Length: 223
Image 1 (cartoon, rainbow, N blue to C red):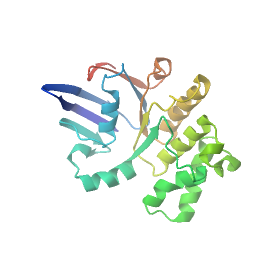
Image 2 (tube, rainbow, N blue to C red):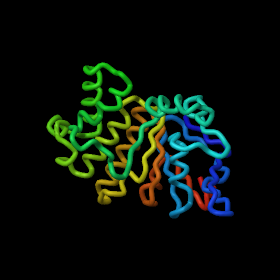
Image 3 (cartoon, helix red, strand yellow):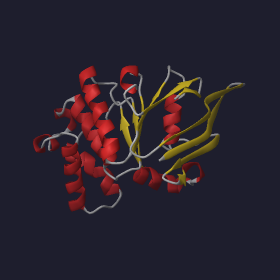
């Protein structure tokens, strides 16, 4: 479960203080898929960056699996991100000279998992997201956009994170493939008992998540 309590992130712009995230509070239980929507500049990306512990808030708390992330020192945050959080990006961010299987194995290598276990889990995850054995041996350039995003999702699941953050995961995909990816994320939230939070501009898809948070000028206006 993730719990966000009175979260604020302010930036200085000349003599002006910009309240990019302005007193946001919400919670999402394990196994639920949540979306964050709002116009450009509403604070979506800043919020996602804070949830991923890639930036620190001005004030407030982010509690994931019982741990207050905002109180962690930098060296602990590195391990926390590797163990507790999986990231899925609009541009996939796969390593081009590695196969799909090797891309998914990579986070487990950083977690010092034995090679045989890394390979077995990577193959299992790729099968779970719908990639055949032949496709698992291909490099990203030989896969479609939808297939690459499936690899990215499998990679995000590699270390069994409690939280997956997806930044416009369907932004580079056609509507049919985008729907398939969202359906996949929804199913994985349940089967992996993982909290998934995505930023999306697609209101038709966000309406199908378990809960939708709408931001305006850094504040939560609708749940």
